[in-house]
Amino acid sequence: MLRKTSLAVMAAVAGAMMAGGLATEASAKNCVPKAAEGTGGTEENAKFQVYEALLQATDWGAWAAWMANGTTPGYKVNTVKYSCKKGGLGVTCRGQTTICKL
Image (cartoon, rainbow, N blue to C red):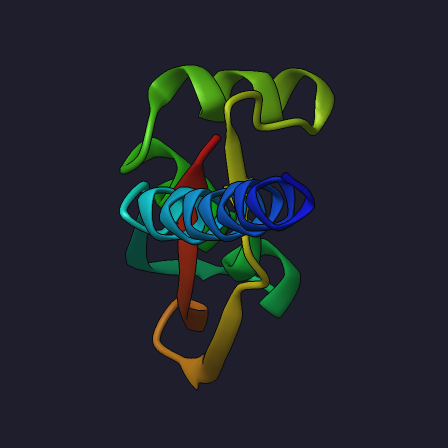
């Protein structure tokens, strides 16, 4: 009897671990890479334009919430990697990130 209980517990633990792995895999499917470009008079303004474009390309509601209160409900925006250059109308920045739907 004790052996059957131990096997049942081990099977339950293994099942929970597999389910956790599936949940992680499923959540990764809800993530998409995004890229955008922005131009501004300063690097800060250009990065702002990039971030806006990233959110607009994902969900206009998330963009509106971010503009209103700095949050992106329903989404996790990973750290944006920027590459900026001066020239033309000021500064042009390109940004890349991964955005995940929660």
